Image (cartoon, rainbow, N blue to C red):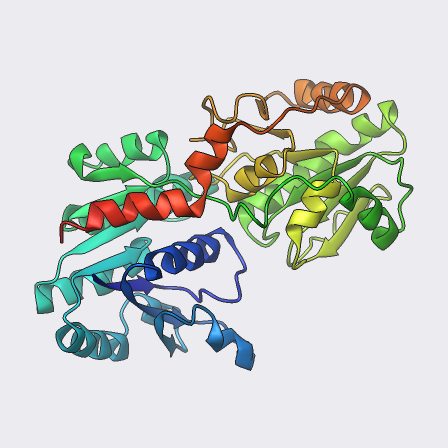
Length: 370
């Protein structure tokens, strides 16, 4: 089968949940299909030569753009994609996120090749929670991206329900959740000593980890909550605790002697494995959180909010995912857990559900009819 995947953002180097998903599922689909990946790149930094060598089994085309709107409508991408669709006899187009929707709809109209649509988040819900402008207009745009697609891949039952409320036929919606690289994200207890040495910490100091792109509003809000509502109360009970906040664009306005900002790291799995507890005090955003899945895959307990846990509460996560919305109760859980840690074995059902291989098989099965 020949598949054209369209991404409105740079895919590699992997820098966020979006690129993690597109990279890994493109890789999975390329094992048994001919895959073409066309993506726009608004990143102002020049690519390293190695950046263009990723996914060697995939035919890639990077369209550098000077204006953000060209991520939505790019004449060069449309022209070259039409040519590739006709020449290669491509069977199906996969649009990654609603920002790839216009390209997919135009290409499908011009070539009569059907397209599928990946809802990384239910975007109009996410925008509304974040207080961004015009969520109503975005809702209309999202509805039409879904309406003309043959199949929609969403991350959870919760997302499936929210998308169906747009008037989309629920039978078009298939759950293909976010996942993890099971070789990269796995329990490794020795990393505690490595991190203590690297960050010059006492190995006996409990480590609480939060990670993500720190310029993204929901993650920035979470850091502010840690700084304003959580850290001092935890320190009163456990004076040697350290909060390690990992991610690009660290908000250094939140300076505290017990907060450490290593910045962006290549090996986040080592930081997860070195931590005693992972927290995600999120109050906005949408979709399922890769950071939570990755932490659980390393055998870590994750403390989060109802928004953070959306779409992730089920039998496979029940012993690892703790959901608390009251900040006093949130603090009490942290203190109790650090004083009396609980270690559980990761159930096989979790790996079966969240491995990229399993998710790739779901997508392959759904698109095989085209």
